[in-house]
Image 1: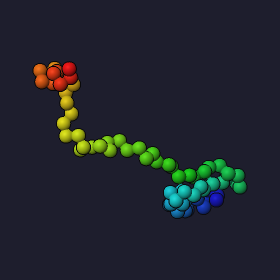
Image 2: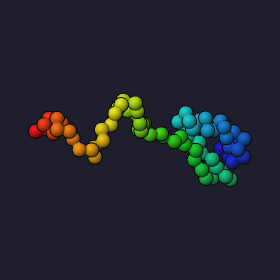
Image 3: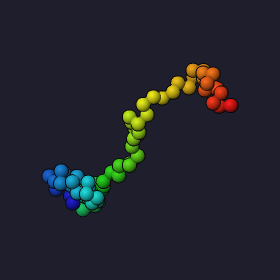
Image 4: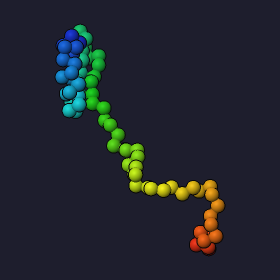
Length: 71
């Protein structure tokens, strides 16, 4: 596809790329650019949000009962 045609159909080309298609754009009959989909990472940060209600403070000393539990 030449540049002028790509300008006129940019939203269509982006939709095609979202569907997994690869679009090659040419200038003067020579390929100069490639429009490809971006593969998004499936890693999600914060997946356990709300599952932990209380995080202990690890810097405070343990009570006598907690120390005995560890012995």
